[in-house]
Length: 154
Image (cartoon, rainbow, N blue to C red; front, side, top):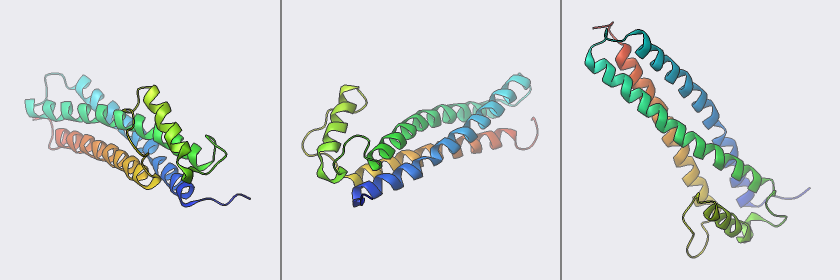
């Protein structure tokens, strides 16, 4: 049995945590459907500020989808790093992270890295910030929808 370095453990923890992004995305999609349904059945009935809240809810849902795509990509990448699918050597050695950064830059997903590659801990922190941003967008989406639906149709 192969012993995992701290970097592989961090990658595994990040991959598991980022898996929550899928659940956030599903709830956000449900909220988006409710918002669009509300807009469809209430044409001309709601006060203008309520339409503004519904519009904000839709925008927050779109922003959440952007973050969910980034979180999903990171979840897969961290899982593969943790499972040594990119390289037989340890992630700790830096070659794997440098090769990953180069591939991501070649695909246009990140800017070309300059200098030393980021360590696994800073990558995990960055990925968790994306997950937090995704959750905040869904919370804003829910808040705007609840504000629009509160207190009847006036």
